[in-house]
Image (cartoon, rainbow, N blue to C red; front, side, top):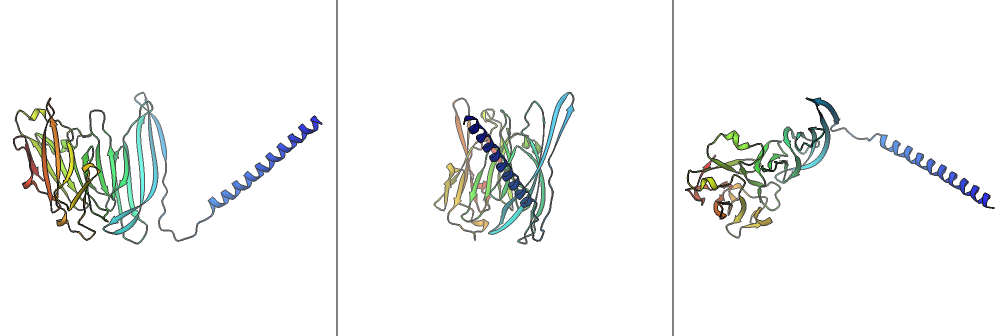
Length: 316
């Protein structure tokens, strides 16, 4: 009886395995048929991306170069019009086998695939990572332990760089409007040292105000006095401060909302707030403020408040 039971159990197991194997093969065949089935419709755009890896010797060290291509559909906005945009993203990174390289070369192209509006552009930059935020490509390049991150924003409509700053940035928002105004400080500690390109003496940093259509920059220079040597070269604390009830600060002052406006606004309506920079210096943690109002969508330097014995502000 025991032998019969064991034989029966063995036969049952074999039979079950055969049934399961047959079912798996049948499902696999169905899936293959589904995957290779031709999708009907009119072709709007066809492209083939590739991935590659190359390992080679560079002066006795093993070096690895990796390249990959991906695609992403994203909505770009021009005023209130939504424009579906296809992005082709090629990412290339190069590093030694015993280290990690944060830097990647991004080659991105944007193209419309519907007849809403014709958009076609290409851009290339080096960054650690990218995001798609506020109708822009937000590219961040991380600094090392003694540097500050450096960020750039590229327009989804044109692919052009419209803004850059170190460490972080501030935003001006209008209800029901996708486009933002961006405000940010670029310090001497920003990685890649972008201020070196300006070749300006005694330059502490720059403050930028940018939108999709325009960019304005202020240069902050240090005057020669006893305080100058104490001023740090890093990005100062920055917030946006409302000047009346027409504007509201959120996110601890990192964003200001123009509550009285809607999608029918004009640039002349962008007013009633200021940029406040607080610079700490010295052993006793002394501080000095720079307050620059924004009026009619521009820095109002003539009404700015700051210590003129320490700073000189030049508008460009």
